[in-house]
Amino acid sequence: MDKPKVVLGVSGGIAAYKACELLRRLTESGHDVRVVPTESSLHFVGAATWSALSGHPVSTEVWNDVHEVPHVRIGQGADLVVVAPATADMLAKAAHGLADDLLTNTLLTARCPVVFAPAMHTEMWEHPATQENVATLRRRGAVVIEPAVGRLTGVDTGKGRLPDPGEIFEVCRRVLARGPVGPDLAGRHVVISAGGTREPLDPVRYLGNRSSGKQGYALARTAVARGARVTLVEANTGLPDPAGADVLRAGTAVQLREAVLKAAADADVVVMAAAVADFRPAEYATGKIKKKDGQEPAPITLVRNPDILAEVAGERARPGQIVVGFAAETDNVLANGREKLRRKGCDLLVVNEVGERRTFGSEENEAVVLAADGGETQVPYGPKEALADTVWDLVSSRLG
Ligand code: CTP
Image (cartoon, rainbow, N blue to C red):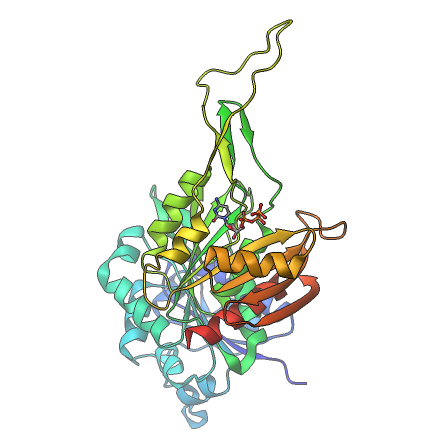
């Protein structure tokens, strides 16, 4: 079988050097990669590097090998185009269909999935011009992954870093694996909660649960590869941020509620994968609770936490918003699941049977997804990303 053909576009940002690592990952995993740098990117990494690492000639403009019509052929023959780093200028050109060099021509002729991994200073990323260009590209079906937060060029820190090349590679791998189906969530905003809340008793103790957050992170990673703008609200997972998602942190149920409701305001989909504590201690001791000799411990009084899923599902922030819940059941799985789906008012409920094999923190999961319209989808024991993709398939068909 022919190797999948990938075009790696490199535009002129300091992060261009990280694209060397992305290129290595792609070639070493059996992809045939053509690198198409912009002229300005050659200030950062020279053509010789790209040529040596890819095993192909490298050109920035359309006037070399004209008889082969490279400005058309390279894009036409690609299974995937990934632009990393994508500068503000490159996003603007792509959004407006400019074609003044080989890379921009390639973007216009490509009919395969296109992934942009932007990298720039925070101000440039947040500028309405850039944001509108990104929204345009997403609406047209491109996968634009959110930049990471961290150290930028010079002394600045903030949002705008190119995600780790290994993570961009994983996004590319997932996008390629979807083949011609393409990024069906492009242009959609999805909000996912993950992890488990901790309800503090005093400055050193809390009531918590054993949720690892892995299923929520799998949902985030797969949604990025399907083109969605992803907001991940994480509670106490300690997991590395998935590339391409906006990550918000929450500790308690009340904080999680605030973050989810805010993000849900313009969301097409809300998935509550977090294990939210149903109760919290009625009182928080500002000083550490001390044991006293000869005294029984004081009982802990609990109060109810808000039910975020029921609230989001009950008052949809947007018409047509899809709301997905999770449930863990030990017995009467389907009957309890159906009852919970109705009670919470969500569109889909992913029901896990909790048992020996299905331990918290594992990489696998098995579930049945119940739908408010009566549907029932069995997902066999397998990787959490497979379950995540089934959830997105069901969501996608409901988004129309
Ligand atoms: N959930 C929520 N807010 C809460 C509690 C739960 O949004 N205060 C959400 C979870 O994120 C999950 C679903 O509701 O999507 C789980 O519902 P829950 O009623 O907590 O089910 P179980 O944990 O299975 O508990 P129980 O069977 O005791 O109701």
